[in-house]
Image (cartoon, rainbow, N blue to C red; front, side, top):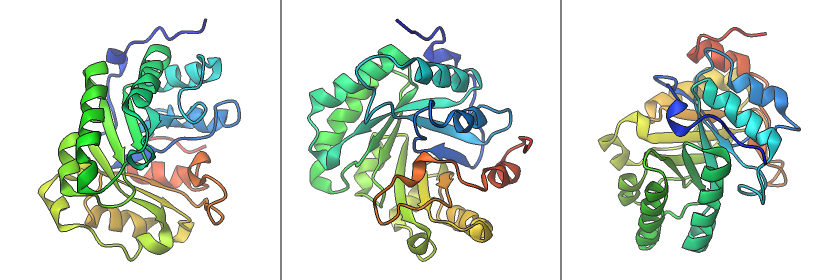
Length: 249
């Protein structure tokens, strides 16, 4: 059976300052060049999400093992993607997926996508957060709300995704007042459909809104029929040149 020889403590560093959080590229078999680009020296990557098959899959995947090992050897955190289904996913199912991610890929934490936002769901997410940290003491936990949640969620995770959507909404978006009580390192923004010519404007908005981790792409969701995050943006090298020290090819 495939396995990783690296351990969680082998992740030596992450990019300091503003940087990219990758919501999850397509399978490494289909997007090998894109996964390789994340491990290049100087790439401003805070973390990248691994989604094997709507979760960890049913057995270790050799291609994913290779991609994860490459990223972690480059000092990039790898997070497993868990689906909270807006609070409807059973606790035991989430923990089962998390254990497989840890056993097979030795991930550094998790992105809890479709995380609920309302106050009534706080106890359930608090239980999930505590359970994930019990499984992995060094867990880096990101709650994927996609919008500003109740402020109580800030105490449950390392980072919150407080925007996920199209550029047409992001450029006019407002930030919740309570976020000013927390440093930018606590917040992430995911923006799709961003034209190349508006990249600098988007970076300014992210800074003004107090988010240190972001993902911008010119890909779109085509009316909700495709996942815009699965493919690297056409201006990836421009993002690297603005934030990192990598060399464009």
